[in-house]
Length: 412
Image 1 (spheres, rainbow, N blue to C red):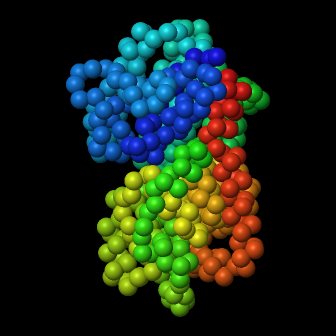
Image 2 (cartoon, helix red, strand yellow):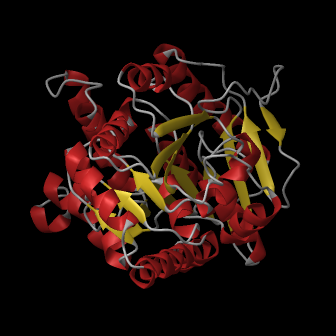
Image 3 (cartoon, rainbow, N blue to C red):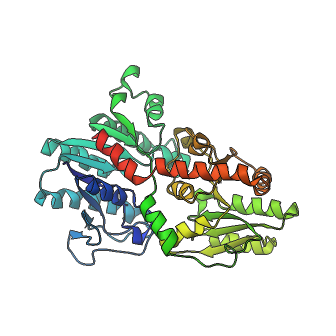
């Protein structure tokens, strides 16, 4: 049995949002006979929830059978300055509260921000135990790709030095995207290029889906909706945030093309909220795009039933240079678990949809290309369509959190 500490400020229990990777891993690590302890921030990211409303630094979450703690951080909302301060708070308070815990065998520090990784390395050295850094987002690389920071910004050079130091000092590195080694090599940080990082300590464990919970929710929480339940529609479903990075506008434009082509039985059903939702609704109204319906926010427990009623699930991702390292999109694995094919307009390196032949990928697709492919799928012979459905379930089993927890234990 291993005592495993996991640091991830942005993880949360499943009833509060979708960032559940380490909750799910903790659940299955416990079932495998290990002793996980997960430490997360008290202000739940992209939600209005603050889990500690006094000066207490730590609070236990009681609704699970393993140790899961909230560490006090401030409410930061949309403030970038407060969010950075909350990162520091998480790190500072984490170092304080863990002093009272029994020594672990391994500590995992997970990005998106580097302080969780630094805490894992620092405490791993203090306790003489294994430190593992998990990379879920390529920072600071993503800062330049999304236009958050100029490549000429001197702070960027400092951040890259910090990133390199973390990779060097960690005992092992887990990338959620499969091309993590490629990234290290391209930076020239591996030992073969004269750098300090041994590629043999780099591993890959992607995001996934808890099939046990997905199956339960699909059967127990039925979502009744006139569009989803209409057998005359070929239903294309998107479930996720509606904001710049996901560019849902491209999905709306594909729907517009389909309408212009005279296809009347294809309906786009979009679930989720975000900063772009109201403007897209206005755009649809202004342009009379009536084959798109926005359903807004739905409780996560209804998503499995919703996706199981779709005919095709759709993924869009903003084109950038990071995609060549692979994908670790949370929604993709729930799409697979629905047993329905997925269409994507962005081809990733190590593309999972293509690997399992469980859908269709058109790289950098135009609205017209996307529309034509959706029409093609809607008219596909049933036996051919079913092959994609079967392959989707095979992919989901590969990325079941039960299997991912086993991979983590072998890595440790």
